Length: 126
Image (cartoon, rainbow, N blue to C red):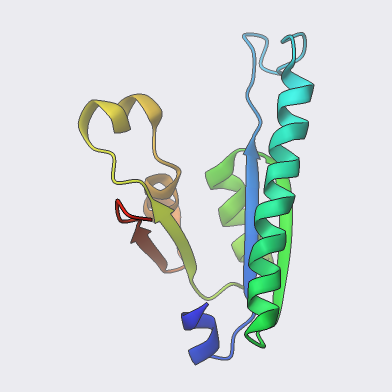
């Protein structure tokens, strides 16, 4: 928010619900999947609503979106479509096997984005 404030920029809050796929590639037939995705969307609406509220409290213009899909692809598509100047993403700081097994959306965005990406590592106290 500080960056948006300094540059008088619009803040975009984006939450992507990772749309898992089953062996068939559609995710259909996975028990409880719809309930899980709905819960994640509610979480996303709460998180982006909080960002929007905090931005407005600071006098910033903000817009939010919650989507289902492939996180890094959808982040890049959204950023290009909305003419975003910089993408700001958190990182958990995983290394080695944990990162290899879990993947890294932030890393994929950094590697593929033509838009500058600012990564912020959360401290242990946050």
